[in-house]
Each structure stands twice: as C-alpha cells, then as structure tokens.
Length: 174
Image 1: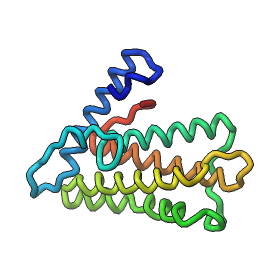
Image 2 (image 1 turned 90 degrees about the vertical axis):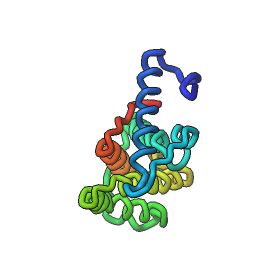
Image 3 (image 1 turned 30 degrees about the vertical axis):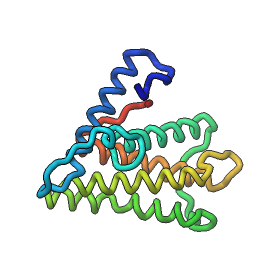
C-alpha cells in the first residue's frame, strides 16, 4: 500500500515490499532485550518513522539517494582536515556517533544481545535525519559539501553493515 504511488514496476514493488516486511519483523524481534517477552506491534513495526526496521531502510535508501545526487553533480567525498570549522554541532555529533559502531557491535557480540545494534542504528538514523533536515549536503559551491558527502557515505556503510548483521537486506530504492 505504501509503495503504490511509486514509479516502479509491479515486480520491483513486490520485492521491496517483501524486504520491508522482513525488516519490520526481524527488527521488532531483535530490538527486544533477551530477558523480556517479545511484544509485537504490527503498526509500529511497519512505520517509516522512529523505532522500526522500515525507518532504518528508508534512512539508508535516503543516504544512497544523496550519494547518487553527489555523483551526478560530480562532487567527490573527501574528509576535510579542518572539518570542525563551520561544520555545526550536529555534524560533529554524527561523526562521533558513527565512530562508535565497532564498540557497539563488539558489545552486542560479547553479550549475545542484538538489541544493542538496533538501538544504536535507530539513534544514528535519527541523528542523521535531523542533520539532513537542517543541512544542505550536496551543494557544488559549498567547500564543506565533500565532507558532508563523506559523512553521508560513512552513515550509509554503517547502516548497511549493521542491518546486514541483523539479517536485514537494504533495497536500492523504496
């Protein structure tokens, strides 16, 4: 139903709907702490906002779309050595949060608790979406744009790797 207005063939819509459905179910189960009962809320699980698998997929696809736009405008990702000048507090916070991925995965593995990864990914996606709403990432005349694109690329890689660890596939488009 949510894909009905999208411009794609029916086969693609069906494949993406299946990926989203699997993500919704897997995420809903894996976000629970091991010692608690699993509570499944259908409406929350398929939401494209907040604490859900589809929200994470949507964020990863959005990041990919930004990177495609950057390619079209021929802006290459590049880490700016002076990145803390005029980057904004949210950008710095996003960089710091991205850098915690290995630590979160190690903890989830050591404690056999995938909910650490789900919690981290949702917080990361929320931080990125907030940054995206207030920052023009791809802008040819902006000298910070290559750094913002690199940050977006790092986020996409982290989201895709985190979701892969949870057994969730990320579609190209949604």
